[in-house]
Image (tube, rainbow over all chains, first blue to last red; front, side, top):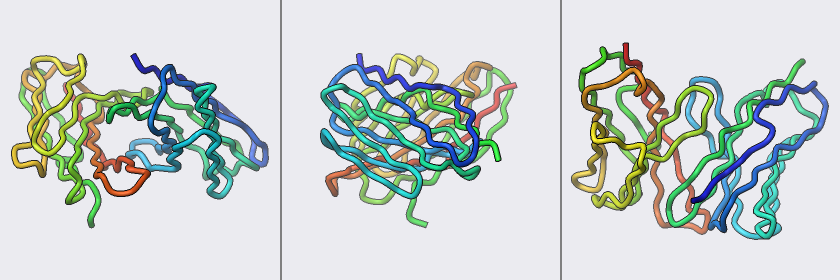
Length: 109
Length: 115
């Protein structure tokens, strides 16, 4: 059974600091996704990672994928308050997408 | 608007009543997914369709839940004899075959509250 684990589940950090969210998954997969969710809202796609060593960056967020270690990271650089949200990683295998529990990120001004 | 749409956005019902939600995917997307998200959790896969065929159902989808996609376009999710534990956000997503990324696009969700 495909399992996706994120850590930490909660993260409170100061503006301007850097931090990394980790996503481990249990079996091989076709794609890995990162999503953002604001309270009461739906999911916004951030990144789609396909292959080993893939790295994508958008603004202060950078995602990477290590398929051998079955690990993806979401790195936040010089955090700003607007990045406060819940971040989910999700793994795609055989057309079925399984989500982690999410990392609730709170950035203090 | 060419995104995934869901209706209604909010539904409040009494325990024991039946409810039905609708999802309209992005046109030409042949795959459609339903998820349930409870407070503080990630979305949990319920079921998905490829065209009109329902290809997989989660163990979470009890006998009280039924989903259809009769013409391979919009889909409905019905919950019979609702229970308080059914209170959640129900998310729909669609994806096509085009492009290597082949990602899902989510609708705004239907928030169900069972009193």
